[in-house]
Length: 481
Ligand code: ZN
Ligand code: ZN
Image (cartoon, rainbow, N blue to C red):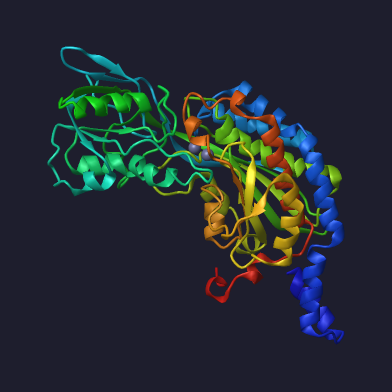
C-alpha cells in the first residue's frame, strides 16, 4: 500500500507518525488535485461523449435482454467503442446464463362483458398451458396478507396483489417494498395453491404500460406464471372488486427460458504511478425487452465511460480507472451466481481484490445528481471536504449517510470489502419509465446527463489521483471486511 510504504520510509527518517498521517491526508487532496477536479467538472458539462454513446447504443441495438443476441452484439460494439476512445486492455468476460424470452401474453376479464387488460409477464416467469389459465381473482393488499392465508387455500384461483401505486421519491425509496412483491409473489402464491400470480406494476405512472422486472427462483424453479398489470388496468380490476364483483381472468403466456451466455465489457484507463490500484465504475449493458434501455441502464454506461474518457484526455490519474459494462444485471437465475458482478469477482485473485480501492455504480437513470455518499468512516475526512467543495457548484451535497451497497453489479465486490461511493440521482420520475416500453432515448435530458458526468468525473478524479485509503478509514467494527 502506498501509505504504509511512505509511512515506513518517513518513520525511518525520524518523522513523528502523527505528522506523517496528516501530511499524507493533505497530499491526497492537494490544491492541485482539487483544481484539476474542478477543471474536469467544468469540461464535463460541455462534453457530449455520454450522449453519443447512449444514442448509438439504444439506436443500433434497441432492447438488450440479458443473454440475447442483441446484448452480445451490443457488448462487442461497446468494446470497439472503448478501444476507439483510447481505453486499454479492453476485454470481454463471458459467463453462462439462463436467458428468458417473453413470447406472447394476454389477460382477459371473462363474463358477459369481456375486457382486455394490459399485462407484461414478469421476467423468468413460466408459460401458461396453451389454452391459458382461468380462475377467480383473489385480491391481497400486501405480500404479507397473501403469506398469511393457509397453504393450499387458493387452489385453482389467481392470486392478485394490489399494494397501490409506487410513490415517487427523490431517492427512489418507494421501490424496495414493492419490488419484494414481484420477486417473492409467484413463489408465495404457488405455496397457497394458486394457478397464477398477478400484481399491480411497480411504477409511479398511470399509463397503460406495464412495468416488467424479474421474479425469483425457488429451489431452481419459478413455480407459477406471473404478470404485472399496468396501473390503469390494476385500478380497473380493483374497482370491479370494490363493486362486489368476483372477476374471473384468463391469462396466457408463452414465455420460456434458454441456455445462453452473457458477458462483461471491461476497459481500463491505466494509472500513471499505481496502475495496480483499481477504481471500478459500474453500470449494466442489458435492458428489459419492452423499451430500449436508455435510462436503465444505457445512461449508466454513458456516464461512467464519459467520466473515464475525460480523465484520459487530461492525462491518466495515479490509479487505474476501470469501466465495466456488466452483463445481465436484470435477471434472476436458478442458482445465485451474481450474474456479471459475480463473474467479475470470481475472476479476481485475492491480491487483485485487495487492490480494488474504490467503486461506484450508475444505475438510476440520467437525471441530476443531488448528493454524494462515501464509504463508512470517510464522512468528515479531508477527502469528503475536498469532494464537497468540488461538487457544490453543480448542486451536489454530501449525503449525511454513508454509502453501503452501490448496486447489484458492484454488489459482489462491495460484499467482498471494496469501499463504495454513491452519486445519488433524482429519481422522482424514474419509476414512471423504469422497465416499460417507454424507457427510450428521448427521456434522457442531455443537460442533466452532462451534470452526471461532471459529478462522476470530479469525484472519481479526486480518488484516482490520490493515495487516499478508504479501507483504513473504516471504524474498527467493520475494518475486517
Ligand atoms: Zn438497472
Ligand atoms: Zn432494471
